[in-house]
Image 1 (tube, protein in one colour):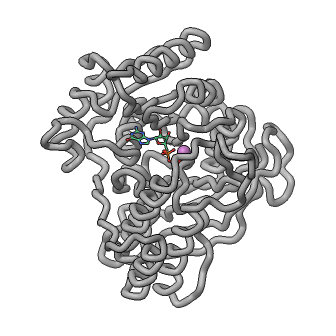
Image 2: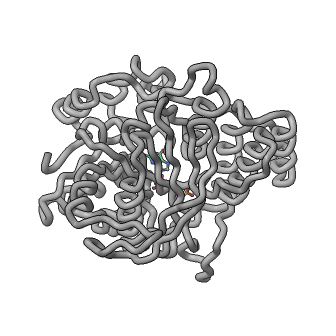
Length: 387
Ligand code: GDP
Ligand code: CO
């Protein structure tokens, strides 16, 4: 893959946020590099793919769509499915297990499937990650953010250097392949051990409605604007650098994951940026930034395939918006003006309350390899093929 090297960036303390860059050519290795574009040698591509685990969070998606996603991920990357799908009355989870087993049998690739409500998982994490396990139910809480945290621990347990996340409701397998190639290529652009790649969908649409490919997502556009407003006010230079506040498709180094906080539910993607900027920009001088003396590189890439996923309705959109804005609202990034603008925006959507502060979980300091091995040896619901 050829990606234009991002030349422009803005520095906020130790955080370098690169302006959005584009995919120039979907596939190409061992190609003589032209000035201003970046690509990998075949050797580096394979090495990076092997050291990148791809985590797929899934909750009751169509198994046919999940199958397309599984088939699209390059074979050299280990796959980790974190499922919160139902086991009864309809057992969607068992279909996911069958798909994983099938793809392993046909290709030999390793696949791990962990259920979010696995009692072994909650037992192993209840002390290490305060708040993650719901006390009345005794299992890990619902939520995409909770799923990503489990997936990241499993990726660390597999000894991966990087982790990339891809949603299970992607209707276009070719788009999924592109996301993986963007992760390998863009992660290799940065020399910092602390790095993140966030994808901005070039075009998006919803499966089921009349096909109309939009340039701007409904949530990401709004939240990125608020984010930029907060950054602009803090620094007194107006900026529009953030384009990927809600990027579900993103990847990072495990080194970076280990100094992050993961937020609950749909606040997770926005909160990664909030946490990075809170610790390594706003509170950097208070010794809050664990990345120092390195920079944290945030690279934003616009993908070329259209992103088609399930239309989950207006309530879902509002939920995502409120949770993401809650992360900014309750952070050190927001002053009175920013908070007022968030409340105004929510009121226009007939949401009258203050957005709640998302629950956040620190990345646990534990032996991730043992965590994964313990799950796989003791669990009756989670499985691995080909490890
Ligand atoms: P959107 O694409 O940002 O509108 O959000 P989606 O509702 O499509 O969720 C993104 C991905 O997270 C999808 O693959 C969902 O199936 C998955 N997901 C949603 N909730 C949960 C959850 O509680 N746990 C896990 N593991 N995955 C979830
Ligand atoms: Co989706």
